[in-house]
Image (cartoon, rainbow, N blue to C red; front, side):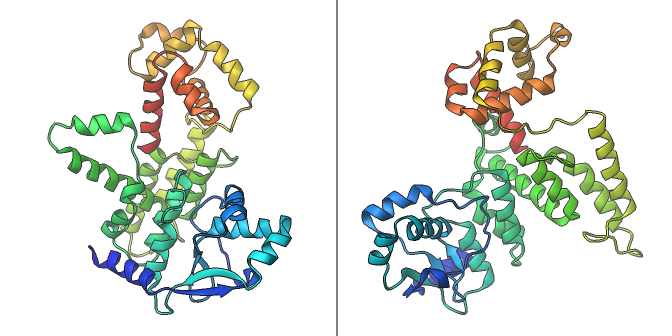
Length: 340
């Protein structure tokens, strides 16, 4: 077991049980987009709080944000139960006062038996939280390795690598994944904001992961100028030029933006189009099996990808089982592109 894992385990082993009033428990934003605890309310009402939230010595939650939200809901909507069950306070566990900050951050990222990190934003938040505590890239990768899933298509590709074992190819792939996220965090904040806009489908500058490399290269060139000390808070001319070039490309419609969630009616209308030769042919083109005749179709490749992504967001199981022929393979292609 690594030194860091031993530190984490030691902190957990040395945590002490206590009782705290709900209003004394402090909560701040963690790596998750949301910590809604609606689904935990019935369980707590039925069998009580079976897993005590983990707190820092200061009283701030390390693990248990969703449980905290569920308890707040119960206090508001089931006050008699709350007063009876928690009249003395909430059972908690408190970490030792001298717990290192990097151990606390690791515990905030590693949510134990609760829901795993799912969205790209949550994973970026996890990288950012771990990178702020002095961990090396290797140490960060060790902490995140198991939550960095890959698509079936990417797994097949890694298995078929001609010069590397699957294990080595997978490690290199995940190193690249981490490197790309660290690039975003090391560059001016406009890059992170643009990436978040893209992932959330928000208005404003949207930056895809594949677009960050050009910005990073320009950023690195500026940093070679020691006289002006260009950096994250003081971007140089090459970075600014690259950013303006990206904005100009967006104006010319050269960038695919992540679509917002579609309504059921919109998705059903798209599904009706799936029987057309146009839609099927474009799907084949995504899979690299198209031909020159597909270029004559009216529906653009960008719009087709938006449709596929929107349908997946609406109902992934329906997409996989009943959508157009080759739908599963098209889905894997898109997921692979999102990991790239």
